[in-house]
Length: 338
Figure 1: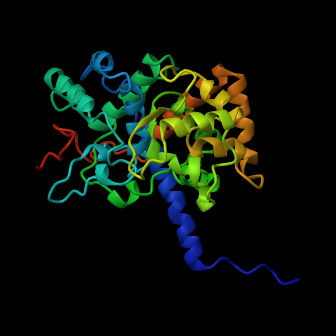
Figure 2: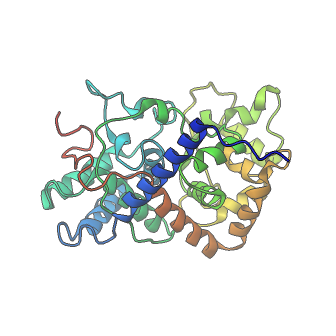
């Protein structure tokens, strides 16, 4: 028998590059620490919490919005605060990408947190760390789990509009969603747990309208939608246009409480977004690796909370800038040289 042919040199080079990148990302993540600001800005957590509590009084949606900001930041360029940058001479803001435009929100609250921290500890706390802290505080205030946020990220000086335009989308198939999470080092349990952030917050009609009337171009509703839930959604979003921004609760049972009700909804075919329900109901056995996790989290809120905290820490470790990389922005909306 002839020996197997060696791998092409180009393939070996790509494998070596990917391995090196994984090692570099791991090394950067190891430089993060929950104690990073203990000396330089000891009241950072209390400051973030105080500002968010005040914002929550005026806007009950803000907790979900701040959690979402970390997802949309970390999946593009890593957790570097690039999502916060406004348009500029050299910046094509990620805020203008389809998944963020008129959808991502909470930026003024980040500005308020940054202003409070600049007053107390000028030039110390990065915008990327503010995003990570705000997500944890928001989950905790909504009744969810607590975790010690790893800190020490620095802020990027560029944005990536094209990557932001390819964020996980509510109309993506399950295989596409799983691949997008895998591409940033998150496995199926992480994916299902992080989707559980939809236990709080709202979604605009435009993100699920096609499920009600013309699913996948069939002229029919999504067959996985519970009939009574479909009727309720049609009343909320009656034959709306593609830009309909009316809001619906992602979790109709307990819309403002961070709990495992979201997974019970999926078991009843009441996931609002296609990207929610496919974890349980994707056709042709595609959900074989995710459906058992959905069922596990529905059975145990404690299991969901543990897995969610673990996944958030892992997500927060996606390609952070550390050491002398990047900068600590004075204003989260613009790079310092501006």
